[in-house]
Image (cartoon, rainbow, N blue to C red; front, side, top):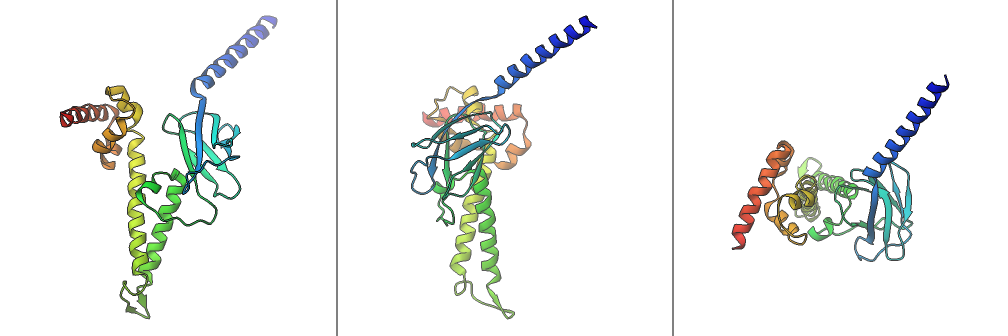
Length: 233
């Protein structure tokens, strides 16, 4: 019995050490900066929580924060005066997060849309779809079609334009999770400051990225790099 008990204790200790080693392998310090969406001013005292581990941190006076997390995990963000948000960690490096003020409607443009978190992007897509539906429905009154240029025509066009911008950004993010900095850097000699331009020029379609396997994607990157080098000559 004593021998069995001793073996169990040793086994438990080994499992504990193994668990810590695995946890340390996947956990890392995630550093980031939180800004106001429109002014780009840093936001202090934002509560940042890892939704998987419940570990919590706060942003400092410069909007900077550091928290234990791993790629694929989610962080929730909360601070008075701003809409609560959630970010999904899929790109290594400093996380730059932009938060929207409570009750604030924004005028969308392509630059601003790239700052939205994934969850905020989904909310804006939903809102743009609803606005477009309201505008289209308002073109009919008493069974008679009213000219869209007279009733909500501009609003409907704006909603459709916003939706196009938002959906394009969402699709690009889905693509870039596989067509990533890490993948491109592992297959090409491109410097970090060259990768964004390369990605913009050779970003594949959403249909392609959702259907190809990893090996085919690697071949695509290598082939694209050959074209990139050729174009620079």
